[in-house]
Image 1 (cartoon, rainbow, N blue to C red):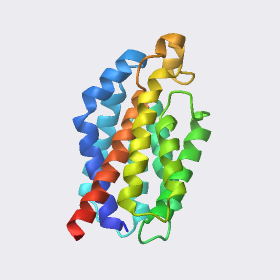
Image 2 (cartoon, helix red, strand yellow):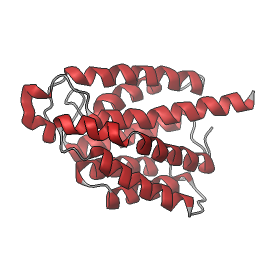
Image 3 (tube, helix red, strand yellow):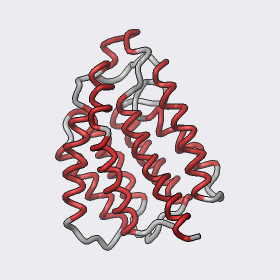
Image 4 (cartoon, rainbow, N blue to C red):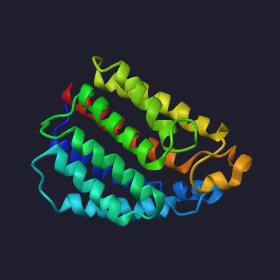
Length: 213
């Protein structure tokens, strides 16, 4: 069970991990995109970190909604719109919820993914963040009654395979689509940033479990 304060901690840790991997994200985007994914994500999550660190929250919804609105206003390009929409729809899915358990997490992921599909007019197999998020969410949806640490570990392992598989996908969305077949052989930067985020969630839950033992 993840409560409001813990959601805030997770997002602050995501911000730190994005900053640590800014150059990696930029390098990936330099190959098939606009070379700015790492820079934009870093700027956005720095702002998120500053906002969350200086604000007291009384609900999970407001933590996630604040994250969403900050990303929309500070992250440039398609990433700002897509991640902003993703977090905003997830915020709506936890309205009036005091904790996030696996069924709730599955529901909010599905809401976020659906919104990204609609906003980006994209789906699985087009070399976007959805190529990691969809298989990740599918594992969780099939195991909502399992142990959270085990389920998130299994889902993250599936997401890592999906991340590597983006090398073999020809981009059909975004700037990378201009490269056509030349986009093959490279990991999608949006998939990488999504993988970094879900990895933080897994590590946080596993550490919480360890602390309880």
